[in-house]
Image (cartoon, rainbow, N blue to C red; front, side, top):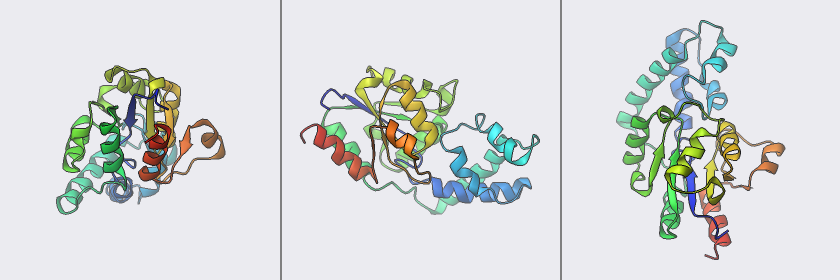
Length: 221
């Protein structure tokens, strides 16, 4: 695996433990929007931009459901929540980033979240400095599972997708990275991969510590 020169990371649910907060935020947003507690929608929406989430919301709640209204209320909840709570970093995140940086690998983020939020949250988590490139939801035309975001992240690293690991926790992100041609390591969080997905990815790891050990073993480290 010494031919691998870079790694592209999703953020929510992979580097930062934000998906459980998203459940609370959608419960709050659903109540405010009059559709009831909607935290259960979090798993269905993993990796999608607000616009790409439109058909998912409308299939569940009808054509009048506006994802931008839901998102506004969810952001309202998160803003208040993070005034009194630190953004939790997933176990092994700092360790794998430090290791890969030490190995001289290029590192990028490919997140469907907007750039301002990505920069703020990674900065608050003390992880922003590890990355050479950030590609965010408002930087691309097509949301995951389209390969655009991973293809662009690899391009910004000056690497081919085949030279990059992609670390993902969600179905849409895995599909995006596979379509781009990356070597995908799945580290599931709320969503658990089915057998088909397990057969398509390079590996499924319990956490980022295991992912680091996998990469290090392949590099003789």
